[in-house]
Image (cartoon, rainbow, N blue to C red; front, side, top):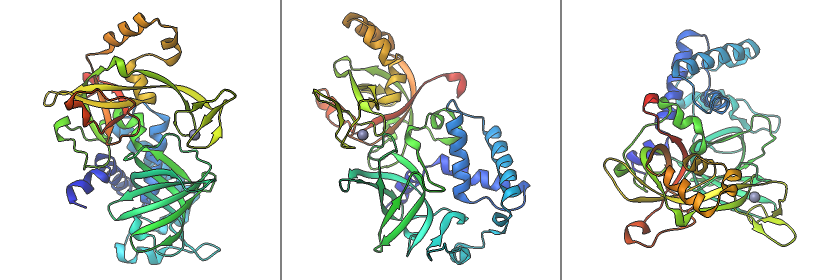
Length: 368
Ligand SMILES: [Zn+2]
């Protein structure tokens, strides 16, 4: 993989901030917070404050959390980075002889997963999401060193699309063939966490967690999240309101007797919600006429209306609302995915529309 691609796949500004937070804590306290601990604390704060947190406030929150951590876990203070070559030797084994990565001080990559290991955390982009068997799902995550196949029973990760940038921890590894790792993950396992960074509203609302690029600089070959400020126009003919399964975001089949999720392969009458699905035309000062797909909360933010209110509108009312929405600026996260594009206009320029908007925030010049 080329270096330029790897930088984007690595999470860019988000991971730069994680390194900064670790250095900040190290500079004023004893002990080194592990990489995974720091990432998870940042995510917890982002989830608690979807509208974003000022950088200095987040750093202070992390510092306080680390003080609490030290108070309860003196063992962590003994973990110090002494060069990557010796780091693995410092890891302990669990009761079954597997190497326990839960206190690994630096980031783990797919290439680090040799032999039996537990407590692994991985950060990367999604290659594929599929059913592996009647009861198991397979999520393929790629980082700059390889691909990990993560097997999951009972999908509970919400909507996950191709090239979404995700973090997963608490994984149990069982096989590695030199370039690919096969891993098992349980949502209720101690230390388990899954975060879809591409869908995280706080990513857009915290300018130190992302890099803004022009549309003309966004290329499909660059995996990871692309953050752009764009002028948005909803394509009225593409507008649909669909019932989706809450657990996975898949559009459900409406059978005469029940609602059925084709991904989870379950009836899901009590686990459904309405979701907008549509295409928008986006442009910025350097590129015009770019059609992308949009669904879920990002579509709701762009459409500036709830599904319930939408259903009360007449056809004319909907058209007027679309017109009133168009011409607004949004900051958007783009993932190079074909997944949720329900409609493509027929014009030549629109055929190559391989992106979806995974998160959107109405652009407010005062916040930048
Ligand atoms: Zn489902």
